[in-house]
Length: 299
Image 1 (cartoon, rainbow, N blue to C red):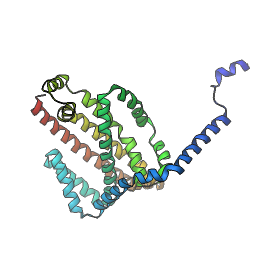
Image 2: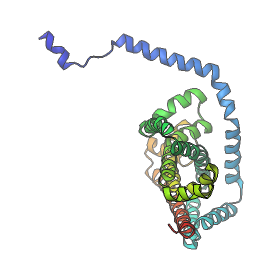
Image 3: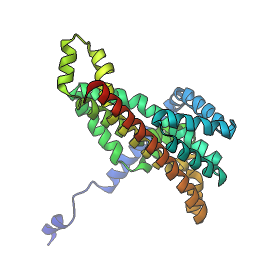
Image 4: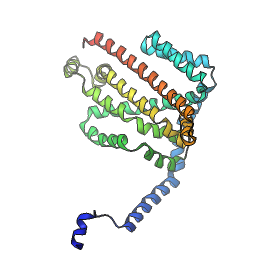
């Protein structure tokens, strides 16, 4: 009977050894935090200053100016007055229901997180497209980033940097950056080989091929990645509010805690509206880019 126990009970590390391993890893990370936390925090000071400045601009600038900027950017990207009018109506209703301030805070952190994702993700995607070795190295990291529960990101970030805007930005960045990396890599790899061979025949350098052929032709795919990054960043808003990130996520969290149905519904719908606006504008820009490229390359 005793011989069959090993079939019924999975072999596992002794509990004392497991506890010792956990304590060792925790103490190592705490020691790292004590030694390098201040230095790492100071490294992100420029990001914090920019985020604070941008948030104050959105909050304290007259609301008609902010609406005019949003409508102008929408029209510049889409060339559609219908979409521009829809953006005006959406943000006007958000403000009318008393959520203008929280919406501007959310817009600030989403904009900064998206810009960081593009600035870091596109070069990484280009490196993956150029080198199979880099792709082999980066792909498992992206798999981990996309499958790891979002709450897990908060633990090391909060231990290292505390609570506030910068930890929130980093948590959103880690959660949202994989799509733009993957689709930049995919878009560049999907560029027609015949077009590249023609460019080489005409003496184009590697830099010229990248900037004048590969990136323009891959732009619709890259825009799809940016679109998904924005959606994932917005999905992270409520979770980021748990570590002190102000915006639409905090009222939702408060509504969950205190069972305020209407508060949660309105702020949740505001997040949905922002997501729809970003989605429609980015898709419209991608379609315009695709039409422009068809005219240039006859593709």
